[in-house]
Length: 439
Image (cartoon, rainbow, N blue to C red; front, side, top):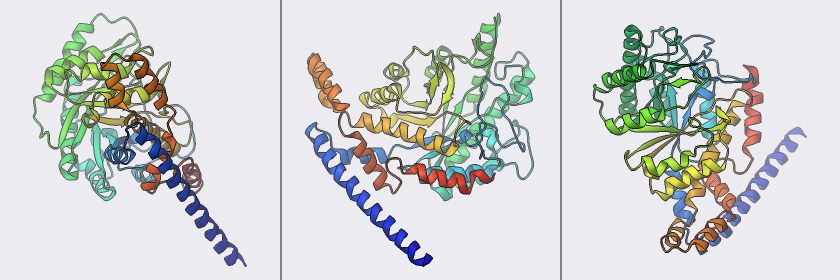
């Protein structure tokens, strides 16, 4: 009897899935017609979406702890992950297991953004100025199995040699030399990933340097940072395998008065060295719009890296949602015709909720923002603007907001074989029950 009931349940589930698939296809066809009336080819848009990977940050799996030591805990650096929801990844195997689950619930093919502190030290620990490809070979092998690309970050926080609050800009030459060597090696590791995986690895440099209160030596610290970066960048890398980016920040916890690597500093450095600038949505004053910086910075820098996050009052790195600023960011990128010249990564860390769920909500929100931008009747809006038909321009932009965007998104998920709508919730709940709750 139990076998019969189980069989009936399976058959009922299949029927429900078929009916839902038919509804998704039907709603998509209706949406396709509406967008076609506005001059938008939704099939072409979905082809574009398929080509936009998002680099998922590994540090959401374990609240930024890293894998250098058992039970590693983040300390300082102006970064703070809050919350103690059960199921945090405790080792590399669990990080990878969680990431595999995340990728299985996302439409499209994505990447992994790895911090140096997540190296594989199973063969023995080495300090950060001694790491090399040895600690990351297993990561390259795993990425090959998953069919994904890798991006990389040097880790200049949570270390005894960063406790003073200064690393590459430290007044102590020994401290500077230690971190210079670390970043040089991280660039080598990035090149290793690019060569092994056949897809260029973006290496991002962010440092926690700064101070809590009045700083007389601002100029000196920034001069030292420039000199350290010059030494690091003096060693050429094959641009086919890796590319450098520098990331600015307004301030962090304990760095309220002075942040060495400010936006102005890194903008100047990136322009001077012809390298990428990383614009993190959460690294600016709450009244600034990062979206407005897109068209300005692209005048001087041909390629950008974006870290998509959600600040609340300050750089608190909340899970990304489909907010106005995220939508505006990708609208500006599409309007500038620069979608092919941006590298999109996520950067949030929230330990107060299911971490797999955080990834799915955040990544899907970023993808929805990209899709929303591509579904705008940009050419027609631009025509109205250039003809100074401002009423028509505003009206068309507003009408675009009520088009059946959700039907196109659900179809994109359906075509990629991942849950559409909120169906992923049940899958994540099941994973929490079977895996996360047992950690």
